[in-house]
Length: 134
Image 1 (tube, rainbow, N blue to C red):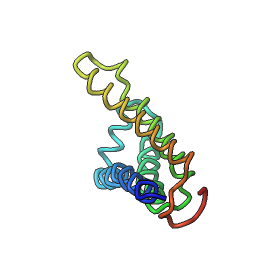
Image 2: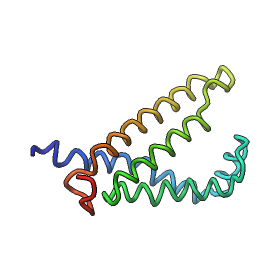
Image 3: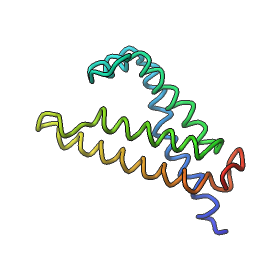
């Protein structure tokens, strides 16, 4: 096994977790703003949605980072990311001046979801807390 095969999965998990974990802390610190943003999209139970998003971004992303139940963590984060793309980056339903930025964010989320699907399919790699799915 070469260095890329040994260290690549760990580096990838670190990079993906670096997106979710700070975002979760930001949502937690600005909880009322997070609830307001979710409510502004017309979603039901915005407080529950905010708690769920924080839980996914902190706890599930930490599992991904550590390589614990990695395939499940990646699948959950993939679904979360796709849902965020559709619900919060709906470029097809925004004013023209917002369309390009929302389209970029939508497709970035789709790409991140694709990377997470790759992790779900191939497992955590050799440096992980548990040996599940290798």
